Length: 108
Picture 1 (cartoon, rainbow, N blue to C red):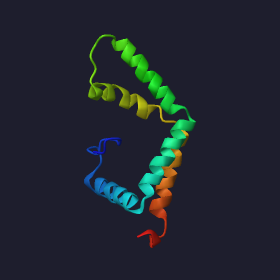
Picture 2: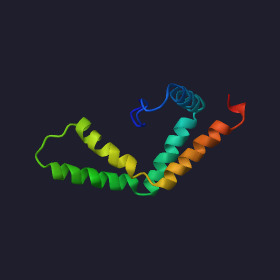
Picture 3: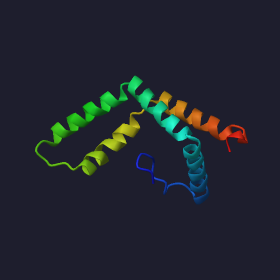
Picture 4: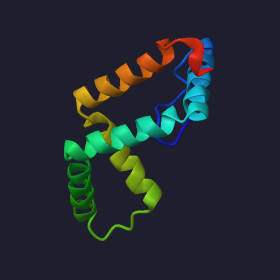
């Protein structure tokens, strides 16, 4: 499981192998870093980061004096963060990955 990705246990073994192979190719070609930067930029443009920061601050205030570890905070914030990524950003990223996968083997 990647730290910022969905749990892989849900995928069938062949799906996991395919996903791993695609991710390895993305990393090897530098496309992973480009996509990560594209995602970062799109999330900034949609004020997603600011909204998540505000959500986090509100969560900390709501918990009051309760000591929260970074891990506990991450467990609380991650589902909200994933659920609030704008659909058009998800679609754009998926289209970019699909384009990469379907591109001629010249990238090999």
